[in-house]
Structure formats: structure tokens, C-alpha cells
Image 1: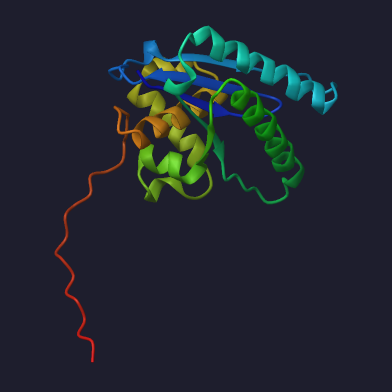
Image 2 (image 1 turned 90 degrees about the vertical axis):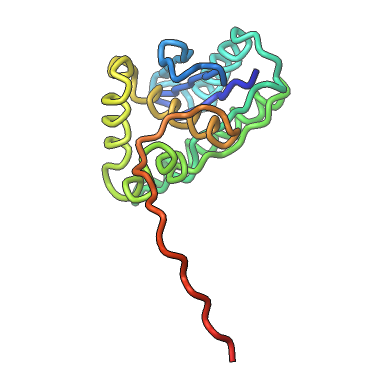
Length: 188
């Protein structure tokens, strides 16, 4: 039984979801958590606290490490936010190390790819795409309207991991219309 572990990492709001491959698109079966740390603490202490919480969460799942497909949201770029990005990358490294010690390999799920699986390629770009994805998720699964923002993003990462594994996932992407095949060009 595969479990998709999705992680949305930040020192201020760290979200995680675990979705079993037999979830049957039932959002009440999604195991989720959000942890926060206080900005006044030194960054290494905050990273250690969040990582310890994640390790505890994973152990509570009582799933063999070989059955867990873990992914963390990556590929974030925001103009003027270099310090925040560096902080997230350092946290991602600590998380990766902690999961590795449990026997779990951590993949990076590019933010654009995560959103494309859920809402289609054209809607996954540009400003406000994250808010649009969260609003769409609230429409498709009203139970998620009470979730924290970090849990919503973590779920989208779990959803991506399920899709990558060929398991049941949710998508609001528009259907792709079959087009006419393009003719090949003659080569001289």
C-alpha cells in the first residue's frame, strides 16, 4: 500500500499530508498536520523542532518506509525573497536528512508541475496561481476549506506524488482536445 507524503515547508508554517493509495478520493481519509515555530528562536532550533515533529508524524503512520513516497514542494522563486528561499532550502536539507535516516527518500516536486497536475498547465502559471489552486480545491472538496494553507499545499504535493505513481489523484485540469496530427516536413 503506497502512501504519498506531501510536504510544504516553511519555518513559519510547515504542512504535511499523508494520502494512502486506496483513499478513493475521500478527503476525510487524508492525514494532515501543520506546525509553526516562533520567529524569535534561532533558525537551527526551529528546523530541529519542525523536523522532530515530522519524524513523529511519519512514525505514527505505522507504514513501512518502502511504502512511503515522499515529496517536498520545490522550485519556488520570488523576486526579493532570497533570504526566505535560502531558509526554505536549508530546512528542506534537514528534512531530507531526517527522512533518509528513516529509510525514506525525498523527491522534489516542482511547484509548477504540482499545480499543473491539479488545475492544468495554463492555470498553473503567474501571480495568484497558488490562491487559485487552493480556492479550486475548496470547491472540489469543501471539507478542505477548514484546512490550513500549508496543509492545502502539502495535499497538492501528495496529489502530485499519487499521479506520478499511477494512483488515484484529483485534477480540475480541462480535458485535452485531440487535434489533427501535424504533417511532417520534407527534408531536402
